[in-house]
Length: 180
Image (cartoon, rainbow, N blue to C red; front, side):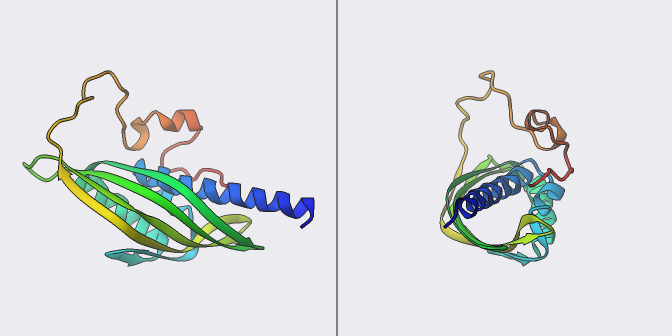
């Protein structure tokens, strides 16, 4: 493998990892436009009960989360990425945490651990998700009886424009970040 090929491989891996993080940022900050920007124009997402076009999924899941939860938070683990010119495959471990807010009931902490198994395509010069399979490894739910750090002076997470991440990242809500 030449040095130029090795550098291209490193760059492709970097761009794919950035794409995966952008997907999570859009989902967690409830920005369906940002989240949808990570999918190809023609894509598919199999997220358990939700199986549809990836861009459609983005709007569906953000709308659902805004109605049913106060927090959505993703942590990404290791990714195994294989690139073949303008196509790639990636397996990325994740833990998704949601705090649901049932009417008149205590909040519930829901967690899902699994893997995103992605088929990616370089579309118009940028990596995008062509097909996503969300694989469930485990999940759990439990009522939140207390929040030991509530009121302790931390900056609280916000959805949309009120979150502190937008300014620091140089982004605007419902804007599509530059994915190079």
